[in-house]
View 1 (cartoon, rainbow, N blue to C red):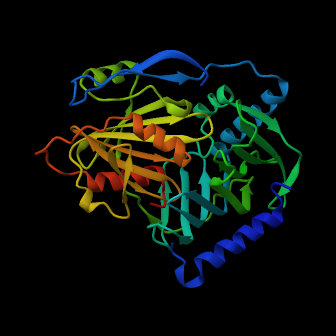
View 2 (tube, helix red, strand yellow):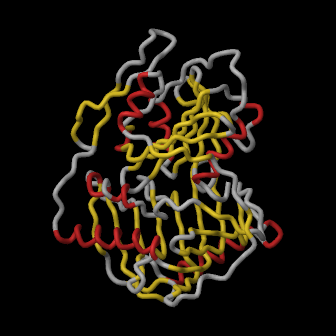
View 3 (cartoon, rainbow, N blue to C red):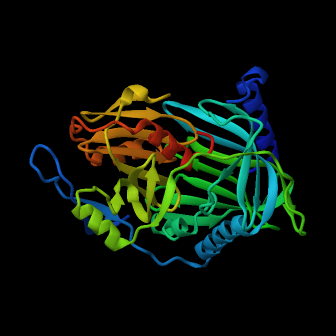
Length: 380
């Protein structure tokens, strides 16, 4: 039975056994959307058209499921809570598991403190890290894309961490294997557990509360010592005109990517004094952040990355809660941070520019790349 409390307990036991006491601390019709950049070989990057999701009508059953997910997205922002939570991410290159205390207070934000970690986590234990609030695990803007590519159903009621919960399942429109499950607390509306799967049914992302305290009165969560997390400096949202101006200036900023990943948010950020663009994509279930920054990549200074071939191009990848891919093309360094399954992620990487880097540019990209990853993954 999905969501059985015994499964959560067994998963936690396996987590502790694997980490060990001594190791603790570790869409369907094409709309002709194109993007055009430059290549060294012919001075004009061939325009590519990607399938773009088309909004479809949904029936009452799917509407009920979508309403539950939207309620969970709203509850995460509006509820005072704290608890212990297990985070996991897996790919062909490896995986990572983290057990953390988490808490949220509306108007003040979300915090976490790592209790134990295995894999590639670098977040120190003991201090509290403030993390950026971006809609929690369910982004309301991304949810607007969900039913374009997935069918939704409400499964049987169940208990999760001792609380009555409802399970929502998402299945690709052209498939028969569940790609995502969401366990939603009936009382608070909070997302108690969340699992994403690849096309073979293997888990690629999982989060689950082990215990949860929902504060219904005025008492805030208890205070922990704070460790400020270094992140890029947000310069604000970019609108369609801003993006077009950047494209005219040579930036390759796709509106749609393979596997139905649609651009729904764009921001300008400063990283170590250099301008970068942060594009956020989703198919409603999986998410992908693409950072583009002018500069030269010094791959020898990348920590924890492995060289990998995508077609004829060399990229640098790092596994963990989120997969991170970095490479240079022309005068731009691209960084992807995503929970998308490996096959789909490499499809995205393959269609982006992979020109020979411009020689002679000042190298200042390594620290910025680390910070970009930590903006998405608070445990990086």
